[in-house]
Amino acid sequence: METEKKVLDFFKIHNEFNIKVVNKDSIINPPSLLNDDAEILLKEFIDQFDIQKGYLEIDKYFYNLSDFGWRYWLSLLKLRKYKPLQKPPITIAHMIEVAKRNEWFDPEE
Image 1 (cartoon, rainbow, N blue to C red):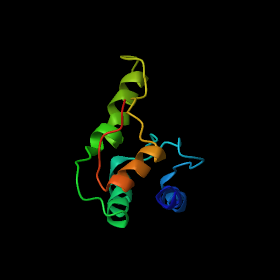
Image 2: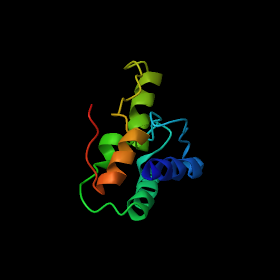
Image 3: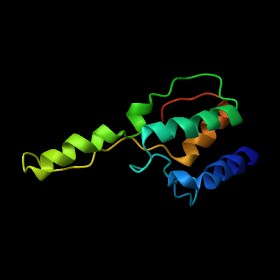
Image 4: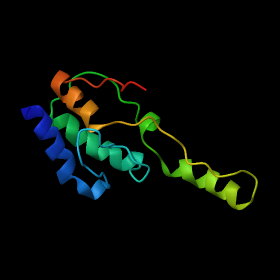
């Protein structure tokens, strides 16, 4: 239970990244959190929780500015209907398991 509280507190204090922490089902990779900021946040998470193994593919789970740019402009030109990209969600519950195992692993989709 202590790890759960520490992970919840970690994401609560990092509210500058626009992550709305309500409970363990809260999503930590909203479209407003771009991959550059996600790298900063997750580097701190990795250091604080001593994550030793695994590989996190940032672009798979976090948005970058170009994801929005060209799609938005194509929709303005009426060449394509704009649909926001859907990235697989990462929940706080998943990050609790990552912290417990000291290893990054992909969430189940």
